[in-house]
Length: 257
Image (tube, rainbow, N blue to C red; front, side):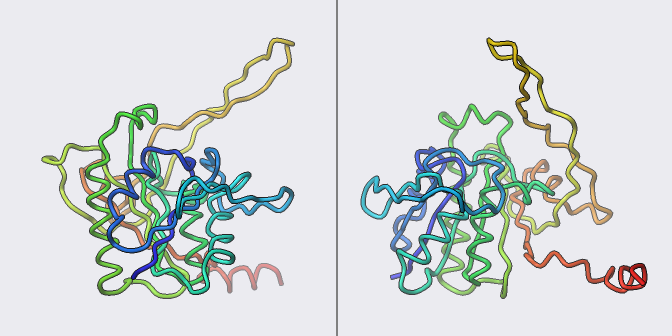
């Protein structure tokens, strides 16, 4: 029997996580370890200053108090498995993870933690114009795409080797308007200032960070994840954890002299 480890960054009670489990429950033994609360945009952080505790929700389903998605995968691999699982899936995230957002994403970080162990790992995100729609949204397309990709990995092989993962974004379209899957590059995400200044009842100022609109600069190849999704395709992007800028090594060496 195949072993599949699942996490997310929206929390253990996310409707999108429930949809994922439902989609692949017959593909193998499913173990869910997810954060006890939402950890969106937490990045690839591990918790070093607080204790972590598994809380059993039901058989093979745990929430991790104080935990990030990376904590969930790290601890699960080191305490709940004696051999590596066959596949790690992080998601289904409520909202997009495209362009440089992958560096902020807790969802992508969960898959990164698996990639570090060279376990086949994928991050799945459902693009939504309004995250508040998650509890009424039909995740049928995301379930179908995730199941097909998971089954392909389990039945044959993972297309990547080493410390790499697949980042997948599902378009918000009706099934009849869906174009299929396109292999893409990360687009160039555009960010603005979405820090909102407020005052609490005591008059103290505080800031609350909001969400930026999905705006980007297109690549010369016109092959970004953003463009694919907005054209009605599922975007699948291979991600390499090695962030060394190799072409700049000699430039920096000469500069430092």
